[in-house]
Image (cartoon, rainbow, N blue to C red; front, side):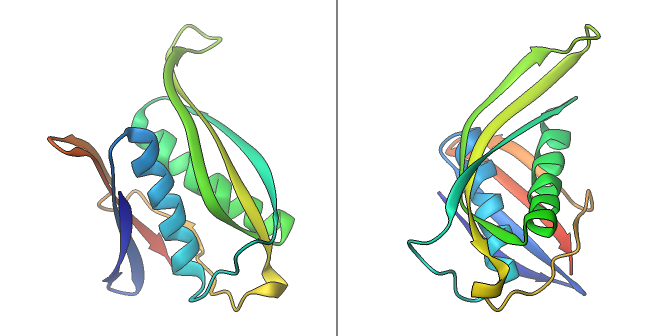
Length: 143
């Protein structure tokens, strides 16, 4: 389980794996943090919760990462040490299928790190697939 940063034209990509869907999605989120700065301080920052609902797994991955970028900008904290506790398919209030993600992260004040701006998550080349060994994800971020 883990992630790898990959150069991607003018962007940055994260390839991640995990034994479970939750582990792979959490690894992509940790890759987002790694793409944002070279060194992440340990032992600082308070944990906060993140809940996201979307129509399918890929949209859930996109919306979760987009929410982390939004929280970074509004809280002035880099979300690190991302833990995805659960990803569950369910039925939304309108009767349509929906997926829900429950997660938490630690927020490191941006002033405490030399952060690069990751502007947005993209659907470009996004993959989230089950493999014989677990799950693989690939996400491109606009920098």
